[in-house]
Amino acid sequence: MQVRNIPREEFLEGVQDIAGLRIMCQFVDDIYEVVRLIRQRNDFDIVIERDYIQNKKASGYRSYHIVLEYPVQRIEGETKILVEIQIRTLAMNFWATIEHSLNYKYKGEFPDTIHERLERAAEAAFLLDEEMSQIREEIQEAQYIFAINKENQRKRKKRRES
Image (cartoon, rainbow, N blue to C red; front, side, top):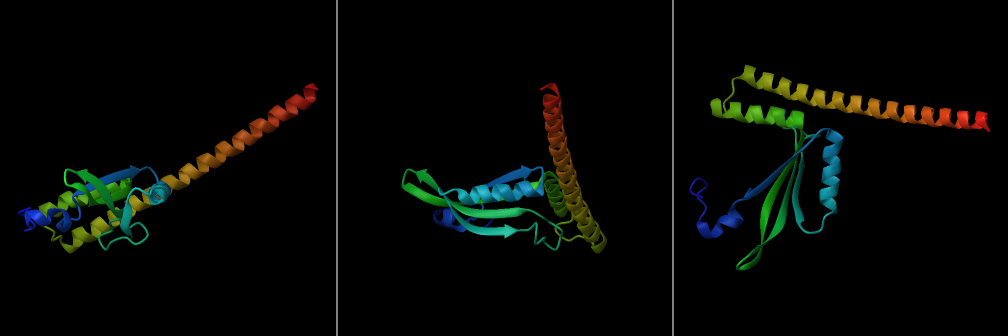
C-alpha cells in the first residue's frame, strides 16, 4: 500500500490487480476457447478485455487479458474485487517471463539493439506457436483419415466374409 500511496480505506477500490490468474495453454486456439468459456460464466462481470495476441504491444508482448469483478464474501458482507486473468501459450509465457526479468536489469531502458532483438524473439515465439498449431492440425487430419481408412477396410472385409 505504501508503494502506490493508496490510503488503507481505499485499498480495494484503488488497486486493480489485487488478484490475478495466469492460464497457460498449449495452442493459440486454446486461448480463445478459454476466453469463450470465461464469457459463458455468470458469477462475475467482465470489465475489460484486451487481445494482445491479435494486437501485440510494441515490445512484441502477446497475451489475452481479462479484468473482471469477482464477488468475495467478507465479514462486512459481499464486496467485489478486480481480478486480472492473463491467458497465453507456453511460448508467450517464456518470452514474457524473460523479458520481464531483463526489464528489471535495464530498469526499463533497453538499448535499441536489445529492444529489436526482443521484438524478434517475441515474433519467433509466435511463429513457434503457429508452427506447432499447424503440426497439430496435420496430425489430427492424418488421424481422421487413418480412422476412415480403417473403418472402410473393416467394412470391405465384412462384405467379403458375407
